[in-house]
Length: 260
Image (cartoon, rainbow, N blue to C red):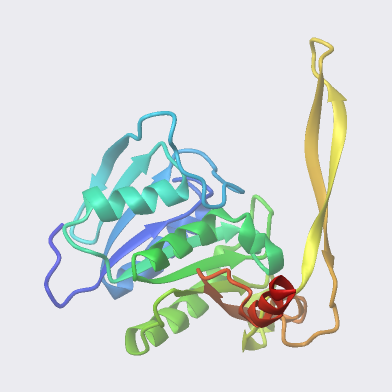
């Protein structure tokens, strides 16, 4: 695969594994915008957030190459994949990092746990325009085709309006038939949390283990400017996410407190 100087070079990854349906749908659409280098793990890395592999060697294998794309398998996390591609596998810094399509929404605080969004945030740290796409559907038979229209809209916008440094986009798509989607909304992250519960179980040897379950609690279900409200009401939500986690609005209060 050769990349012309004027062509977009696009780095694609996910956290659901190389053979996830969402990744294949994303590849199909993103190839319309330039040459693609895809790197992913063989198995799911969902919930890995910004984790890095530090205790075992990273290994990568080129699986496929043609004039449209190169596809690599990696044994690391989504963040590892971005770092490895940018530092070793690509002939130049990519124009875009695109992650997804995640199996399940990454709205509200789920962005903190998401390997999909961690890859987008890692792209941000390299100064690359980055987007994470998710479909609000955990079903094994989820229909990712509903996402295609909105991926194209977002990427066409990015082609003409680069993002500020340190900001990426978190795009969540409702799981409804495409004719029922009402449009797109620019949102903020809803305030909420996961109420974790652990089921205590016994394995075949009689040893105790615990299985994580959980329920998301939306603390502001009626706030119409949030990503959770948008998804519930059949809108695609777009949230600008910053790598700067500083609570800037609290700095002045904190300074006063420490002067006492």
